[in-house]
Image (cartoon, rainbow, N blue to C red; front, side, top):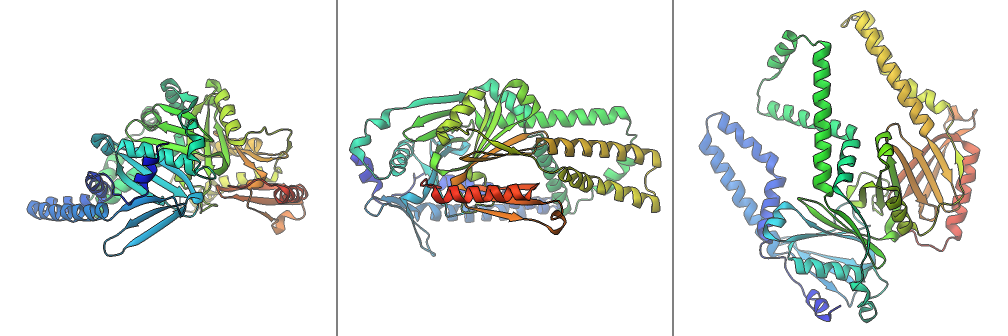
Length: 496
């Protein structure tokens, strides 16, 4: 690598001059919900007041954005092996991140960045719950140089002369084509999208309440005057299905368009995105969990979804998406190739375990209890006729039984010499892989009502999240715990 690159990054520098504009639009986007309240004076006839408040708000955001841009500087301190950020006008902050703690560097390009031909650099470490460093606007050259330096940092030392030839070598791993993305979009995330639609409706109704707009009387009268026949219900269900599939398809294509994985040295560089282009460097040493998900439709199409959880400071919280890498619609061969790249070994011979049948009974009881309570309440305070209640209750109990039984049958634990694997799920069957030496702690519990049946629960915690095993044979769980503790103790491998 050219030593000039290192010299340039050794000096404190600002972002691109257009960075203040990027920060300004980012501030508008983050405060867009607040601007909606400007509609309230307009509805009251005070249009001038809304314009005045809007202008003042935009001026304040513009000044704040310029201050953030001007007083944000960064550099690589190669003598101390750390990345340094200085920021703030009134509250000055100096942030120093040791090279060995840099977990992941992402190069993104949102729509606003594409307009100005700029890029965003995000740096994560295993010591925070959010993005440690977020450089909002840099040129393509700086982004490329930053990426090359990041690859050097991930080595044990900056041996520039020995790696000069290697930096030019790329081994193409695989690509996810458009047809595969279409298949993925049409076969995944049904329940998540339904929840998203429900949340959007709730926010919209809350916004109407904030504006003191009465919508309940109109909706109530419409429902009372409308006869909901079987045909109308079918039409509403069809519209909902089409809406869910359309949202899934569009969001999948936009987010993962031109998904491409390239091997660079000991890392895997992944690029994807249509409107927002992202570039992620995946280091196998940082991987804590490897998730393979497949439903019945995906099985017919011979594709799987993969989620890779990396180290997080909030290790027991799996909801931190910044520490997850999603690979949509892999073929079986691509899945094996990615697994081999991450772990460099095979699972080998496994021992399998299933939970006790009591798990099915408990889940079924918890599922049908609301329905039984509804029936009891209806006996005392009738609000629905007996025939409709019986039909709804019968359908609900049958569906709950099916879900609980499939979830029970699909729940299975596998143990090998190097891995602990959990298979679970009702529709989306998820298989989670954890290397034994990356387990940080194991919690074994046995409630009082489990003692006579010799059953127990086990909680496995890693830096990338947690996994629960419930209602398994307690003696076998203790054997597994002792075996894993022994392997962690004798292992010379690093967990990260």
